[in-house]
Length: 120
Image 1 (cartoon, helix red, strand yellow):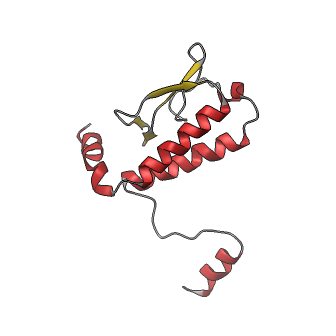
Image 2: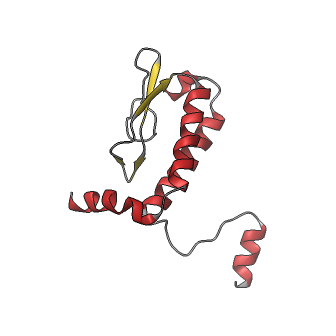
C-alpha cells in the first residue's frame, strides 16, 4: 500500500481500484445500502415514494403489506419477491434475511441471472 492510500484509510476513506462488478457483490452492496436507508427511517410512511426502482421495497403499501424484491443494475431479480407486514421491523428483518441468503451464495450461483441481463 502506498502512503497516500494509508493516509486516506486512516481517515476512514475506503480505497478501491475497481467498481464492484459481480452480481453477488452488487447485490450485497445494494442490501447494505437498503439496510442503511432503513436504519435512518423513523416511520414506515417515510418508505413511500414515487419511484419504483430505487429501493427493494415497493413505493407504496398494498393494504397492510409491502412488497420486497431484490434489485441490482436497475432490474429485479426473478424469484425474490415477497410480501411482508408494512412495518419497519418486518421490512428490516426481511432485508437482513435477504442479505444473509446472498452471503451464502457464490458468484457461480448468480451466473444465470447475469447471463439473462446480458441478453437484453
